[in-house]
Image (cartoon, rainbow, N blue to C red; front, top):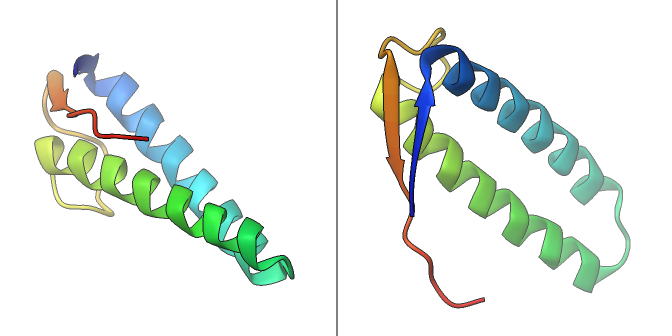
Length: 80
């Protein structure tokens, strides 16, 4: 799958991912159910991978705004 986004869309996505990742870390720490915690950790790993790919096409992780006018993010689908 390929996704093309503008600079402002990429910046917005990075901000959303950062917020979601922070929320997930808090939820993981507060969860007592081992199965639920595992699912949250797996989700966090997937979101971190997407965030890294998105940041890679623009500039180093943690920097903003994304420099390119349009960023192509390739995502290959794997099994569930």
